Length: 584
Ligand code: FES
Image 1 (cartoon, rainbow, N blue to C red):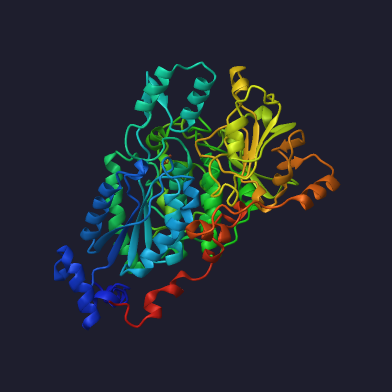
Image 2: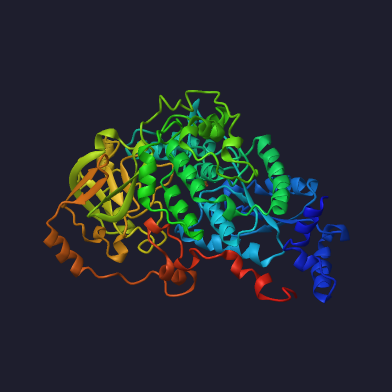
């Protein structure tokens, strides 16, 4: 090892725990040797934490113990000392009321676990939707060298010879069941074959989007985003990531060196080109906030206008994530749109993004379209504003019905989700296909946690009449697997007195996506009168984490982070700076 490596090893954080020959160093080594480690592991090996969001309560991440073993053998092979640790995991399907209520809790868990322990670097194992942004946010704030290994998508669903995409096709077939066109028996068969392995959802939902975003940010090895969870190459890239983590500690390649403004522009560009989930916006704004970078919604819209969608994967297109991987995956997409990217951005490989994707190839032009012949001319997601959304709203135009992108209709208002459930399928509901369905009080404070309730179902009587899409709007989020003409993330939300709070059934609402407008068509004096009469509801929580959440959660346009977690140098809080002996 060179003398500069020796210098770097002497400066590793872990040496403060394991490199001392006093009572404290004795304690740190002796207690850890309870796990059967020999004295050699304490002789200056970089200590790499394997931050694992494995949980049997989260099927998307259920294979991450195996992935962790592959990471660890890579760490050992490169001369490091791996130590795996758990954090809270966030599984979309089982966690109630919504994983978004807990994203910031997981981010705090990740940040504080890294900071409090003798770790020189960390490998982040994620998968299901919120686990990826939570780990990125925590690691960015802790700012020790970090590399991410997404868990990969599950195998495609297959039913009677038909390919099934998770979420997207569930919604499609559930509408068929509600309309009486699909039998109970067929619906049960689909349940048994739509989720064929561990791994995250099979479409370009939030999990796939965030894995691609992590790679575009430069936080994963090249090609890590889309390899299926059960593909042997997933373990191979995990092993390689473990090796790379050791080298990163010696290069002091920390997240703050990688997560630059250029990296965020690449990530937004990629999000638009893949027809990514609307959730990516809220997560990217939150992550940028951790680094003190301002990322206004207008930036997303600016990039959206100049980025065609080139990925033909559900819900914006036809194919599934397996097809995407076999077509060349994200490196092929980034090569295709390379003229739009910041190719000098530094990545975890120690090389630039341009160097990483230099040899990428596309193997299926049906799945990854040429830039000159894209799937859609503009980016997947656009940002709206207007008197109904003064601080912005989002629509995924790539998954919307083109005939509804400019529409004026009569509002049919649901005051909250309970009201929606109680009345939506009532045959006497005064609604037709030209109406605009409005859901209030589903935002960060109102729901609380801004759940994915924004995909309001089509009322049953309209479904039976063959209606497939309507304009729907709310302050909620939608799943990345959702499709339809759905406006979400309206800010400020109804629960804090945003204009959404004062919409009444019968009001006219205008949506104009080309002009990026969302307007409540009532006179200004009437609007002022209604806003003056508005009163907040009682808070949902009076104690515990829920109370902390309600007191500190920011609005959707600010990323829904906690106000006290934005900005600052995370390393200021390092116990090594604050305590002379970080010991027993
Ligand atoms: Fe985990 Fe869809 S439920 S990614």
